[in-house]
Image 1 (cartoon, helix red, strand yellow):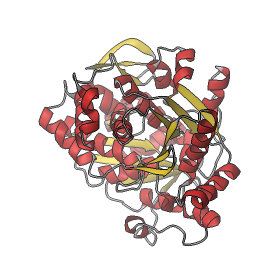
Image 2 (cartoon, helix red, strand yellow):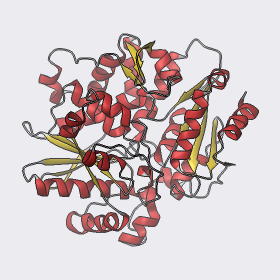
Image 3 (cartoon, helix red, strand yellow):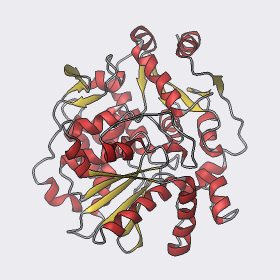
Image 4 (cartoon, helix red, strand yellow):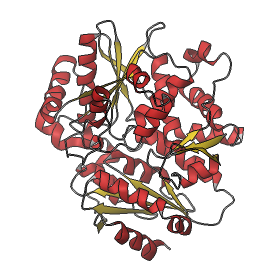
Length: 434
């Protein structure tokens, strides 16, 4: 399969180039020249398939021309070693739990798949692969876990100082080894800009053999489409889900749209954001106006210039009307989010994190307008990753900390401070890694 740039539809590169280089030289994003089709009979029988078989079939559709069958099956098997269960918390109100992986966040699915695919693509190469990633919370931890100790790779994680939770920060900064954390005195958007700038410096990119682990990398998105199909098959037959997706950089929503484009029957997608509501505002007005992000308690969604916006447009042929027919947008502030955490607990007994709470608010609003709808809200991270907020709203000790998080509490943070100047960042990369 070949891939083009969203800024140059005439460009054609092969899978290895698209995955390992991550970003075209023109600062677009890679997309497949043609979206694949699922094998005949798949959609007639997908409810009978288990999670790993769904993942394998979708991965084959996208990557089967370029990756050996046995290798791809191993990649999927290693990725999906944990489930994504659907939990009904009230009538027509479902939560898709995506936090059962090693770092307790949905990013584990994409990061584990990507690490394994990259390892296979570079299996005959001697040059070290440098993975650059910007994180607003969970991406960095998932990538660090996925690449920890992977031979021939080193990972550099950029995160915004003071804008991730304490346990999220520990997941980025205590691993060591081939994982380096850079604490940026700025926002997530600043981190993302620094990462992109390194790729656009072609000599630096080649010297360091750079690749990205953000959702600008297509190999992050495809495995996230697996759990949309897996979730739909857990509903009673004949019910079309409305997926409600807590959104920041919009990679997760893009993955859901990929599943729909493959043939998954879906009623609607609802993009749920905090006050960083660039996409809901766009869906209202038709004008895309990125702006500096604002810090909130749902920090992984604090994005003012979502990278995957261009992919959203590409999937609908740049038709605003078609895009708006399939995606609705709703935004909520911190006070509403805090109230939702309490309301979900009081009315259903379920403990939901701040990101899922934003999604639940959107799902509630959607069902009020469409009473016949069945919603699936993506719960993207375990509540224990946001203890300050959870303790304030539900009481201290209300959330049990899983052992794999608890063991990080007393470990020493190791992070290099960094400003937002691209020249200084490039110089650090050359001094430390070349």
